[in-house]
Image (cartoon, rainbow, N blue to C red; front, side):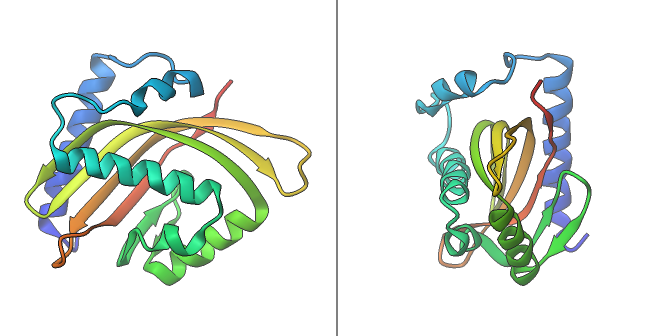
Length: 173
């Protein structure tokens, strides 16, 4: 792995997810169950709150098909892992993937941050989401739900950028 500290963050993310799976504390995921999560969660650090906000902003840009704004949230050498296991490394590859996806459908995506941890210049946000996808043809909508993990790295200018981004998905019904 390129970033040894990143391995620690990913292991922590996995342990957190495993603990949540053993002790499910979240209700069934629906768009309605996500909406109340908009409130500022008590006990979160300012950085954790900021990173959860970045995830929500990503979803807004995605919904609005603002490709440039979505890509600006990623580091130049970021990695994006799709729900089907494909790996896209670097902004140019991620741009090509996202451009194709945005051209093929419209997404109404609602993420819900569940766990955000920060350690030095690395952090992760893990949560779930609900998404309605409408193909460009507009014929059949598909509802999905799943989980995501986003690993951030603080840049020299203090800005947090996405280094690794992965999600899972399955039909919502």
